[in-house]
Image (cartoon, rainbow, N blue to C red; front, side):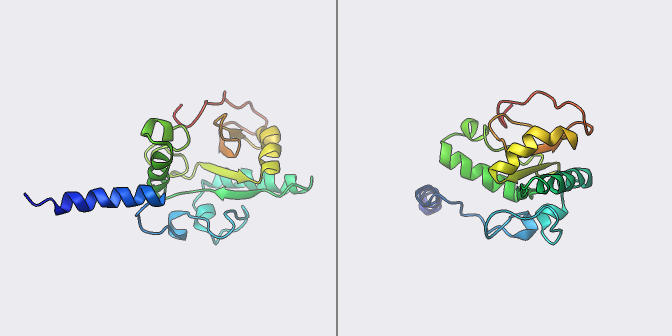
Amino acid sequence: MDLRPVLAAFLAVLLTSACGSSAAAPLGDADGFIPDNGSVSPFDTSVTAIRNLDPALLAAVRQAARDAQRHGITVQVTSGWRSKAYQQQLLDDAVRKYGSLAKARESVNTPEKSTHVTGKAVDLGPTDADDWIGRHGTDYGLCQVYSNEMWHFELLTAPGGQCPPQLPNAAG
């Protein structure tokens, strides 16, 4: 029996774990990856992560960003739409970091369940923007979904409505 393929696979997993990074192909704009400083204006439609967001969600985020700016708060998108490959890479990285799929799922959804993949979720920053949107988001229909992610927002109510109760984490 030729053990070389098994050994090669084992070494690949070992090296990936030791390096703390995925062996997947590098992510780019087409996957929704936001490079450089990790955030972008919600008005920058040259970026796929922004351009592929659900139009109603994007409109709500932009209006909130305009209003926040009047209060000296700059709203940035740290993650918007993501490809299934990007979402899978985030999940794989979280499994390596936390040691199990169950623990990783508290922070990262599967590609099949992620609302980022459908363009219906956006992560915002910096922290002062998250706080402002958290307090005023219902004016725009924006709701913080997970109690452990103050940056993750979805359009879950009509403007001025009431958000549903927060889930404890991405695993539900």
